[in-house]
Length: 85
Image (cartoon, rainbow, N blue to C red; front, side, top):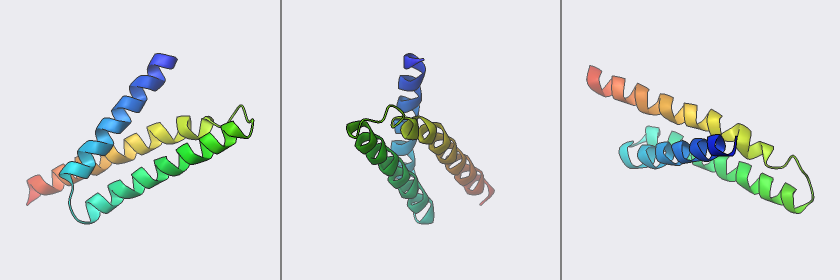
């Protein structure tokens, strides 16, 4: 399970960096919103962990695959729209 989470984290980071580099305009704004949502999940997870909660990292574990899918959809839809032009 640890290797899966590590792999998912690396895929998310790769998608996030790729989307911030390749996308422009409102597409990039959507990628920044995903980055902000992940940053918020990390902050909540860290603060909850420092507060003694055992379930605080659940925020990060839930947000990571959801945001990775959103970023993948952004990149695919933008690619399809670019091909259609």
